[in-house]
Image 1: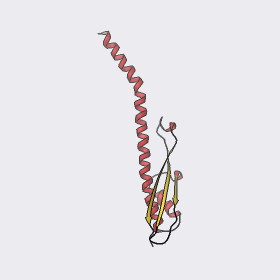
Image 2: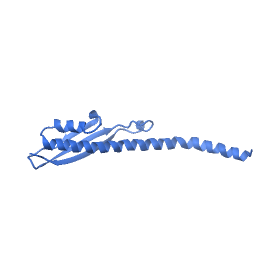
Image 3: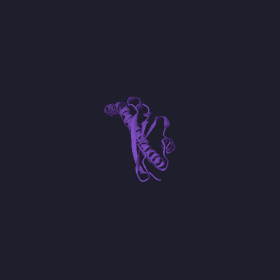
Image 4: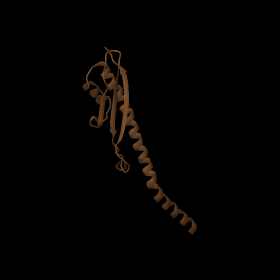
Length: 126
């Protein structure tokens, strides 16, 4: 066997051992970004449902319940702010904020929870 070939094989193993943790961290970070993006989409949907509920019935309990029921997000991490509701034909604005947890191993403990928010406006129905 060629001693030079054995040396090259050992070098490849060392390079793999040094580079693999960085590749794994990057993949885990991409997964975490994907989970936050999914939560953003769910918050937009929850804001639309809350605005729809607020446009149909007065009060703040309806929009909060609609936002919680619209998605599998944890209601304890969600905050729903309902703007003033005027007469029929006016507009009502609802803002939903959600603290998206960072739970991916190795990456999650390095960063705090991310707050995502969405605002939706609908016309008040009579």
